[in-house]
Image 1 (cartoon, rainbow, N blue to C red):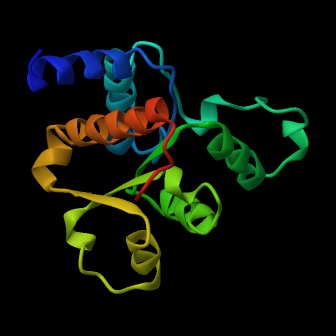
Image 2 (cartoon, helix red, strand yellow):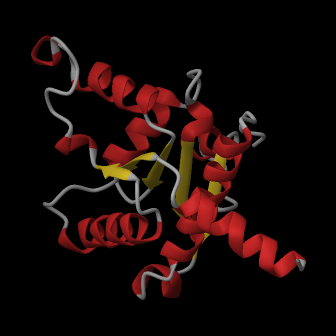
Image 3 (spheres, rainbow, N blue to C red):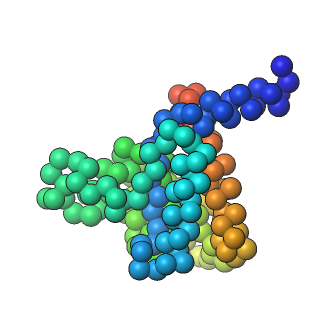
Length: 170
């Protein structure tokens, strides 16, 4: 069997793997950015047939006593139980989520997608993001949502690591 044939078999196995994927980003109040989150969720669900793909706002009451926990505490639970968290770094809220969890034991689960204009920025928030899994997208990739291809590639890598029982290396 060729490398290409084996790669396709592995890819199909990865797509059938159970994954819990969280998608953080702008809420419904900002329709353009929210629409990107929705599109990414749809594409991840189509690619990974057994994935549970959620937004934090859809996970209310997931954990015992959630009504008594702050939003930060609830999001920590969400991050702890997901395999990966795709962060569309398009809003103040997403930036706050990154800042809260960037130094946690779950930081490796954050897949941060940031506009390329922020690549060489030297602010404190930018320096926090650079320490993690930060990936950059262009205006065109965001506009036509081809950014989802990059998201799927990163999630395929997460699935491969999960299937291999290897820790994240990034």
